[in-house]
Image 1 (cartoon, rainbow, N blue to C red):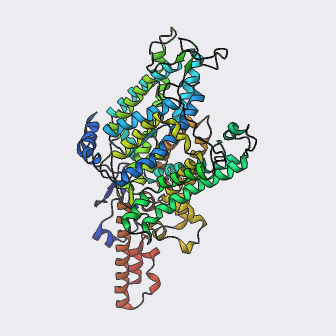
Image 2 (cartoon, rainbow, N blue to C red):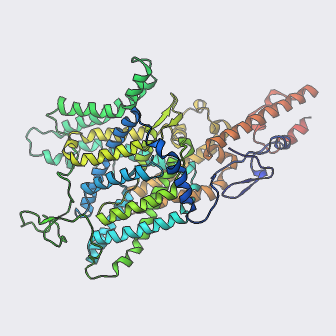
Length: 633
């Protein structure tokens, strides 16, 4: 809540002078006092190094673990299957890209294995089980850089990658011990909205058709798209038929998921319990239905399948016992591979270059920044007050868990996994109960969904061939659903739509009622520019590795630049937490009523006041209100 202070407003950023708060009359200020416009807040007492980890373990694991592992219900099952499909498809896709970037040293099997064991492990011991771990673009780009460095130094990539990973784990442990995550708490709704909008845009673009990457439904209309290669030899194959069916499957999956989810507030079907079941399983039912349509109704039309491995084994196949060359690329005259690389990495395989373990500490610093920011930003989005999570945060403790998982994955030759922002937010939204207007009522905070999702990923490794029955266009439809479903709750997106709306039809929100509209649009325009900048950085492979750093730069921009462009009360209306906004709106309304009563008193005494004096411009924001009333009297 916004507490009352008599002279100054204290925030983590600094002291805000009283006279710069609100343009209220002196009598009203004396009677009510100014609200505490809180930009950042924490209820944790400061302590020595390492104490934050202990506090977080007690608050999360020590308090909620049993309840989070025992709240099993139908929503748990529905969400687990939904997020499983949203997790296994990117894992296979990332694995395929890893294989191309690392000459098969890391592939789909390694990515699925890492996803499964890290997810199950984190579900049991992690502090914030609403978070989903997975592969990310910046980490993939950095792994590609490490492979190229290893090739130029003529050393084993997996050994070099392992040493860098161990250094990253060490840096993360130090960051957790000194509570470096406290700086992430300076992020406000301003940064969260931009990042959430970026996530939604990535999902939507990758589902419909990304112009910078050959993924999406509309790429099927390109005859030379790689998905058509395997069917070129068939005489009756038509890429147009495949493209149209793929478009129907993708958009149909999205439409049916929304339609079934909307039945929760429908008047039809037998009762509310039945409608709840349909709504909870909406995405799973949609995936099943359109998979049946593809395989049974249109069996003659070929559609893209998931490119899954044939068996559970390391992807890299060796030409000889040294495992330094890849079969069949490096030994095309050899009919069969010698074998596959071992699971455990030999840290001493340095080709006589004993300085490599120390040299690895350098690039590990950049990798640490990527991992730390990716995790921190995702955790901050998940724990935003608007999500109404009550079991507490565990930034530092989870940093320790991530460090352990990266260390183990490095020693096994598995990819590093970090907080997957898209899947994490989707996980929270899927477990959220909302009213018919989209307002959050409650969230089921559970470890069971996290556990079941990744247990299913682990089981799928044993039945990889079964995943081929799910068409890739159907999964594109799931991604499109996830992107579109997140837009209505993003205030940045809502304010952006105001640009194309009749001003008389603006929704009744605190910002539209109490702010100058040009100021509100200017704030939105700044977010649009930053959003476009982030999209550019993410889309250009050369600079994609610096993407999280650009996100982090939004925080000092908000803290030190925006206060020069907007008043404190304007920033509170747009960027504060909901409780603070409600307190400020209540303050304005009380002041408006007070001013109206003063004007009525003046009118009763001399009859000179008119109805034109009772306007929001005069009763809520002016510093000279008391002088105007004195002149009127």
